[in-house]
Amino acid sequence: MNERHPEMNNTALSYKELTAQWNAIDWPRVENSVNNLQGRIARAAKEENWSDVSRLTRLLTRSYYARLLAVRQVTSNKGKATPGIDNTVWMTPAEKMQGALNLTIRGYRAEPLVRTFIPKKNGKLRPLSIPTIRDRAMQALFNMALAPIEYVTGDRSSFGFRKGRSQHDACNQIRICLSRRCSAPWVLEADIRACFDMISHDWLLENIPMKKSILKQFLKAGFMEGSQLLPTDSGTPQGGVLSPTLANMALNGLERVLGMTFYSTKSGRITKAKNPHKVNLIRYADDMIITADTKETAENIKQILIEFLEIRGLELSEEKTLITHISEGFSFLGWTFRKFGDKFKAQPSKESVQSIIDKVHKIFRKGRSWTQDGIIREINSILRGWSNYHSIVSVSRTFSKIDNTIFNMCYAWAKRRHPKESRTKVVRKYWYQIGSRKWVFSTESQELFSLSKVKCRTYCMVQLDKNPYIDIDYFEKRSQKTTPRRRLSRNFSSLPVAHVG
Image 1 (tube, helix red, strand yellow):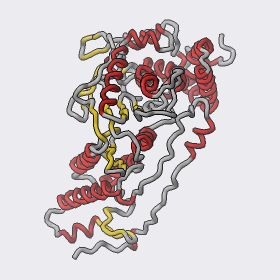
Image 2 (cartoon, one colour):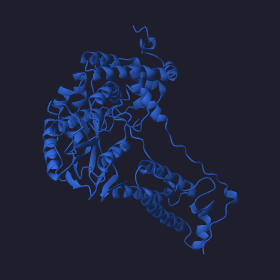
Image 3 (spheres, helix red, strand yellow):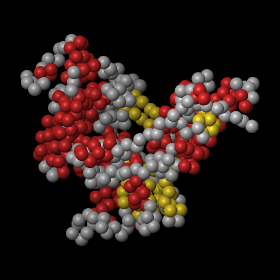
Image 4 (cartoon, helix red, strand yellow):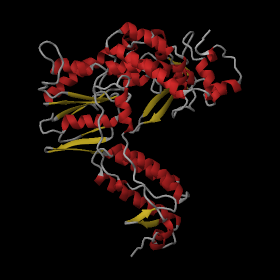
């Protein structure tokens, strides 16, 4: 009998009762309760009080509020409508509430995953393994307890799949490590072969601080490929909620290993006060770069990395692991970083630029019969997100080139709709002058987003010693720092048409 939450005492409720219970949930109270527990776990892990960590983890994974939050997480993300092997999804409030009430550890058994493949940029296929909605909720529940531990024990310069950190933080860290005149000139670009698929189960079961029986269920569930059930002897499933945290924890500790080798004191204390070899690690999930003062140091780091990964059942991809001089440049997270003399420059990579052009081109091909409004709406949604991502690097020239390419696409689309009309008439129909801006592809309700108008912005990097589960005030203030958007005034009824000579 649960006296604090009587709604948990009877799971045989009607559809109407379940719906009412879900709609009546006080979500701020739920989030505060879970956040408090996560903060206590993080503080206990920071103090290395592992008995308290174990006790608090057990408390969180059995919490009614945590179960509600786990269900809301997996039913509100992009994959909410993707079923697992049982062809079940939780879409209605009643289904979500019933799912939360049934989310118990006692007698839990994970179902096999559904294997599917998605194309990669290089033309190969990436295997995805989709758990059932119940298994995803259970993974989300345990991830709430494991994430604070990972944040405390993880590498300072790890930025992928960690609360309060992003690719932009990784970009700024690269700038800090490589932009100065005296910075390291050599970079090791490390690529791990099939990282998620190859992590040793034995290492995970031995080193991950969570309930072993549940973790084993997640790892050994197997997967269905067609009508055949295949076992999983290694790796964490790409598509699982817990997998990014497990992968991070498997790769954590590399920074300490490098520190012990290259910048530790005689007493064994790791400090970067003296770092003669200029060794710095920047990691985003399984993508990483390591700086070095010489090519020989980079080769030594590569050997250390090979030995570090071997213990975890992982190995480097020899063809993709490169040692590069900064004057030649390297690509990371969609950006190219390069030094021209003493000048450091970061800009969107050629692959990233080509990908956005290809996406826009596909929209024009798909939307040959669409209205101008429909075309603009679809393209703007892509361009805004892409420009926001890249606006922290040097983008002026790149954005102008893309704008020019898109202009040619717009004209080809418009001319195709009116093959017998003259160039002047086509332009008068689709392009307007707005204020001082000419040649604006627009309608009475909206205009095509112009990348050239996007200015480079300064990104305030997260402080690496701050923890989102402990330093809550810092991250709340950080989230409130938003750049105000300038609203453009339109009066299309009085706009002059663009004239063509």
